[in-house]
Image (tube, rainbow, N blue to C red):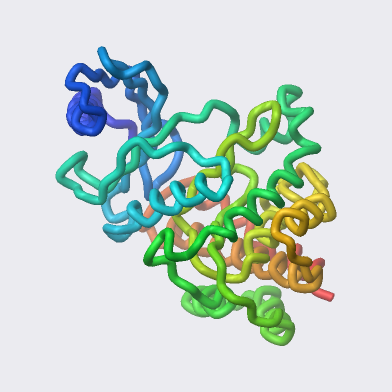
Amino acid sequence: MTAPTTDEASRLGERLRAVLAERTGDPSVRVDNLRRLPAGASRHTWSFDLRGDRTPPQGLILRMDAPGGFEADAMGRETALMAAAGEAGVPSPAILASSTDADDLGAAYAVMARIEGESIPRKILRDEEYAAARPLLAAQCGRILARIQRIPPAAAPGLEARDELDTWRRALADYGHPHPAFELAIRWLDAHRPAAVPPRVVHGDFRNGNFIVGPEGIRAVLDWELAHLGDPLEDLGWLCVKAWRFGRVPVVGGFGAVDDLVAAYEAESGTTVDREALHWWQVMGTLKWGVICIHQTERHRSGATRSVELATIGRRVSENEWELLRLLP
């Protein structure tokens, strides 16, 4: 991440103050403590405090598209989805202001409530502060996922349905390198597809690291950029992928058991989870992450984005190949 200059931050702060003065109807509002957070490449994240004569002090987060990061209306879909998620009972930050008009701040943006808590998986899984929360998280995830999938697709127009297996099969073929374990997994996935179900809203990246946790459990679900329409079990399977356990043993995010996740999901959704279909989606998620690791490494190898971090992700490819061989019957 390239740190913004003082002048850049100052200019953004003034433009942001003008936008929020209009939104709040309070010309006295001030933007204090504006700082860029070390997260995200396609989106820039800033933290700041807002206060004014008629505006009580509040901590806020600004998310902005980076140049070339997303199509113009992606931020609009994401903020609409977050608002709908809040109405469905999903813990979600309240949206104060948003726009896809680059004239406001230079890029599409959303300003939302700052939720205090922890999102770093290592801390969530190891720190004593979250010891009481860890046994609760799997069931909380099950209930939250059931609520996400109750969101009416019309609440966020533009969400697309896609075939996940075909998407990642094509992505792997595009690299032109042999990966026998991935190709074996693709053949197995093709031969054992679950029965088609009516598409629902899928978060697309629901995992440890994409929610904020406090001592009592999950306080907010983050990062809705990859939301789409699909099989509800996709999110459950992704949460069970080994990569999101961060070195811990429990299958669900490194903090809980599949039985706890499924029981809470079934109770909240009123449906029964097909465990074979859930396993299929866990295999699918492992393949997906393996192909993403190839993509990230190729960004470095090609010179498009020279990065030691991207280069080291290359070793994750073989880890996912091994995990797929372990998961396949």
